[in-house]
Length: 112
Image (spheres, rainbow, N blue to C red):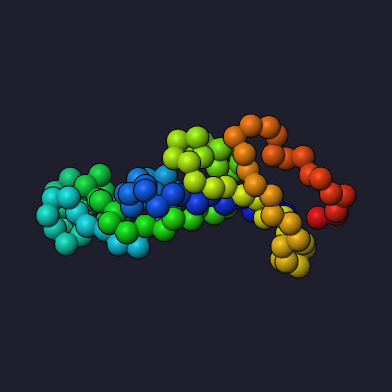
């Protein structure tokens, strides 16, 4: 199994990270409310409200496609990699994802 990860650089703000797949850990309503519950514009989940602004978000995005990792690398910089896992869940190799080239070719003969 292969698991792909992308890590944002520290210069990217929390809301931009959230909009690009990172989990938010804190946020608020831009209308001035404590949260978006009861918002006059949106009545669904508070973090789906167009007025929601993430103030803290994770830097790491996991479980993404290589193409998404390349898009994020191209747009923001940062780092992306693939963890190659055994069937028991142990990682036996980590390879960088680069903007150029095909990242699906393995340099090992290992049965996953």
